[in-house]
Structures are given as structure tokens and as C-alpha cells.
Amino acid sequence: MSQYHIKSLEEYFQVYRKSIRDPETFWEEIAEENFIWRKRWNKVLDWDFSKPKVTWFQGAQLNITENCIDRHLPTRGNKTALIFEPNNPEEKTQHITYKQLHQRVCQFANVLKEKGIKKGDRVCIYLPMIPELAISVLACARIGAIHSVVFAGFSATALRTRINDCECNMVITSDGSFRGNKTIDLKVIVDEALKDAPCVETVLVAQRTHSEIEMKEGRDFWLEPLIEAAYKDCAIEVMDAEDPLFILYTSGSTGMPKGMMHTTAGYMVYIAYTFKNVFQYREEDVYWCTADIGWITGHSYILYGPLANGATTVMFEGVPNYPDWGRFWQIVEKHKVNQFYTAPTAIRALAKENLSFVEKYDLSSLKVLGTVGEPINEEAWHWYDDIIGKGNTPIVDTWWQTETGGIMISPIPFVTPTIPTFATLPFPGIQPCLMDETGEEIKGNPANGRLCVKFPWPSMARTIWGNHQRYKDTYFSTFENKYFTGDGALRDNTGYYRITGRVDDVIIVSGHNLGTAPIEDAINEHPAVAESAIVGFPHDVKGNALYGYVILKETGETRNHGNLRKEINQLITEKIGPIAKLDKIQFTSGLPKTRSGKIMRRILRKIAHKETSNLGDTSTLLNPEVVQEIIENAL
Ligand code: PRX
Image (cartoon, rainbow, N blue to C red):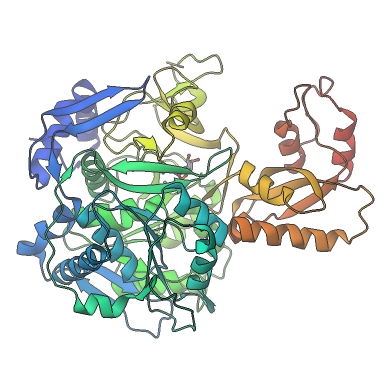
């Protein structure tokens, strides 16, 4: 008998020890007791990090939507699965029961089939946070199509890159989206992206904003009439355990975004198990994660995790400050939310506003508060604890990544004593370790090093779509036989982990991972720019903001620097999206470089952090004189 629901610290340690001693039995018991399998596995785990190759539940067959929807119909058919809370509080909330969700997913799946989509095809979903987003994701999974959701804040260029990389046959979008008091014409962005994406044959368009848009004959179809005409039942496609479920892009420190590929059985088992425990979810609870389904947090902990547990999950279309900064709390009161999961950047933004926005609402339903996406600073942690949790609601600071699929290090509420800014202890089955600069594991405590994982877990990404070598190079080559996370971490005397941040060239801005290289590439496309380098610097709401050092082609560039800054940010918005805009742009005659021509970001980072007293040895640089110039003109 597995201990699916951990209820005490003692039990946690017991379960954890078992999960390490005998991982296969541990995961097998969890898989056996909680899901519908069309065929049982013949091997729980097979792995080799040197290739790297990992398979879980090999030989098993299943469909994740049968587990997330059909399985609940006999007992929870009339229970609300999804609560859709629109951007505009005046608009009616929708409660979608498991039965209704089943029907809508089946109809959507039949539309996909009718348009020629079959198992293994890639479908790009570029939608706002409306029910069609959840439904289309599940419809793909039902027929075995691989969904690739692209966050609807990305630009046409970013969308095109992602569509072409995994050669999607179809794009699902809407006429537009509502965000606060803005309307964004998403279909126009899709049209722009598709100017150079020959793989796409069909575009399905949901109606949301009623904006005037163009429909291309033979390619674009309004969704609603197709759904209405579709048959209300659709048999599942029986999938192999390791069949791909989805691709989700995440930024790399260099070049192209990485299409992280997740597979079916292991992902389902791990996400369901972590959801249940990290949020101590009970049958009657209402759970709300404020993320967007365009990110991994939304995939795993708005959709698959909650639905695999038969939970009620809230989907919010809007933003925290519309119509005012009380919106989150109004929603918590309205739906009597029990578990609330958000990002530190949102907490910091909310904490800056007047307390009356919180005090107006009854937050007594809250039982668990969660955070994810970046390190949470102490001040924000205490505000969350005191003001939202009233000092008696446990906070789970959950550390994980797009690549890990699910939560890896986190307290279990009411079980693990918390310390502000510590993600605390690894989840059962997770074997983290810290590595030093020489590649040795640091065994004792306390320790400070690079965070790795030395044993596979069921929901890890299996590859980067179309580029297994890059997967190996990025995650399995820095330290032998270990998955390298790209993060640094501390471990205290009691074994608690505290994540200190990225140690590579990824910068987390407002919880979004941004690689420096694609932003620099965008800036360098400006005709006046010769070269550029991006670093992060601390920002009190975003966590980090971006600081760009830019060399102009002609040092005597006569144009106004203010205009150039605007043009550069405009280019970044076009190529990547507004989230990647620079807060500071410093024009400089050079960038500090090593003799082999590599930009010394360490120095640029220190200058951006205003820590210029200890820049280290700069004498070995190719151009040490430029450092003084940069310091003098720093913004
Ligand atoms: O640096 C870590 C940070 O976010 C990175 C992963 O980003 P992404 O793939 O977009 O996934 C975010 C949502 C899971 C990590 O490498 N990060 C995530 N959670 C935390 C965190 N840093 C500190 N504390 C956390 N709780």
C-alpha cells in the first residue's frame, strides 16, 4: 500500500526513505492504485543518464484524459472541474462540470480529427486563458496529438519560431484576448507568424473579443460552428507510456528556445501525486493557480494535476490589477478558494499597493498558499504570510522547472516546518545534490553549490524536440551522470534547500525565463547597433530587470539616444514579446572581453548591480580600459 497522501513529518521521512531505497516499488504502488491503465507496464524504470535515456512504465498503455476526466464521471460527474473567471468581473463566471468537460473535450477532439489531426501530429495552441485553452489541450491529449502551447503574450516572430521548430499542422487561436482594459488581436499576430510557416494547414479560431479579423479561405475556420456540429463522444486514443504528450518551449542561454518534450505515463503519475501532497488537496476544495496555461505551471498545476485528482480548478483570464488591485482577493472570496498558488513577482506587486485592497475581502477560506517561478525574498514571504495567510496558513515555496515537469523541492503543508525563502525538502523520489566547481558532489552540510539531480523521476522531460544532442549537452554534460538544473542552491544544517538563482545566462524577469542570446540577437538587428550584452539587475517587483550594454556602429551616432532606446525595445517586443524589454540601456564604446573574445558578463553584472568596488582581476581582459568607461556612465 503506498502512502499517497502524506500527513506527518515522520511519515514524510519514512516515505522519502522508501522512495530512495526502492524507487521502482515506490512509484509502481502509486501508479497501480490511482489510475486507469489499458495495459500494465512490464518495467517500471529504465535509465542511463550518459545517453541520456529514461523510460518509465515501459509497456503500459493509457490515455491521460481518461484518467483526468472519464475516470471521475461515475462519482464526480456533476462536480465542477473548471471555474472560468473572466477578465471582466461583470461577465458571468462559468462552472464546467466533469460531465460537461467530457462532452466539450470530445467535441473538440472530433473537430481535430475531422480536420485531419491524428496521433503524433503537433498542434500549436495560442489562446488566452479561456475555457477553449483547457479544452483544446485535453482534446489533443485525447486523440494523441502533441500539444505545443505558446503563451499568448509572445510576438509573431516568437510564435513562428516555435511553430516551425516542431512543424505544427494546426494552430488554435482566438480572434483576440482581453487583458485588463486592453484588447489584443491575437489572430492578427497568428496571421503574421504564418506568413512563413508552411507546415500549418489549418487555423481554428475561437470567438472571444469579436474583433474584426481576416479569415483565410480554406485555412481558417471559426471554431464554434464546428464544435456545435461535432459528435459528443470521442473514444480515447490508447497511448504508450512513453508517447509524447506535449512540447513546451523554454528559453535557453543560447540560441533557439528549447522544445522540452514530456511523455505520458510518468508525467501523469508524478503530477497527480505532487498536486495531492503539495496542496493537501481534499475533495471539497477549490484550488486556484494564477499562472497561465502557456507555462509549465499551468500545464501541470492548473490542468493535469488538479484534474487527475478530480479537483475543482479555477482558470482566471485577467490580470491582478483590473479593475483594481483587489481582483485576486475578490476572486478568492467569491469562489472560497482553499489553495492559492502564485508567483513572487505578483506578491511583490500586490504588496506595494494599499492594504485596503486586501482588507475588503474575506480570505478565511484559504488553507494553503503557494509560490513558484523564482526565489521569493523575505519581505514578500512575510507579507504573504501575515497579510494573506493571517499568520496561520502554510506557504509552500515550490522549486521546479519546465524540464522537471512537476514540483521537485517543496514543503508539504501542515507537515514540513517552513523557513522563509527556503524551498525546504525534496519530494519523495527526488534525489537532489550540490556540486562544487571541480565537479565533485558536496556531501556535508551546510553546502553551497550547483543544484543537480542524480536519479530519474517520472515527469522529467525526455528530450529537446528534434535535438537530443542539445538536451544532453545542456543538462547531462556539465556533471557526469547528473541532471544539471542551471540553478545554484544552499543546503543548511538540517538539509533544507534554498534556491539562490540561475548560474547560467538565463535571467528570470517577473517569473519568466529569458535567455540573453535571443534578446541580444534582436538588439543586434537594429541597423545602428554593432554589438550588445544583456545582464540582470535587482528590481523590487520583477525580481530581476534587464540591463543592456549596447555598442553603436558609429560612435558619433547623431540620433537621439532616447529614440534609439525606444527603437531597440520596439525590436525586442517584435522579436520576442514585451516581457523581454530592457529597463536600462547604456551605450558604450566597447564590452569587456577575454582574450578569446568572450564577453565577461560577470563584470557587466556587477556594474549593473552597482557593486563596482570588487570587480576582480580585469588585467587579463583584452580591453581593460573599457571597464572604467562603463562604470563612469553606468545608469
Ligand atoms: O531558477 C529556477 C526558477 O525558475 C526556473 C525554472 O523556470 P521555468 O522553467 O520557467 O519554470 C518555472 C515554473 C516551474 C528554475 O530553474 N524557480 C522556479 N521555482 C523557484 C525558482 N527559484 C527559486 N525558488 C523557486 N521556488
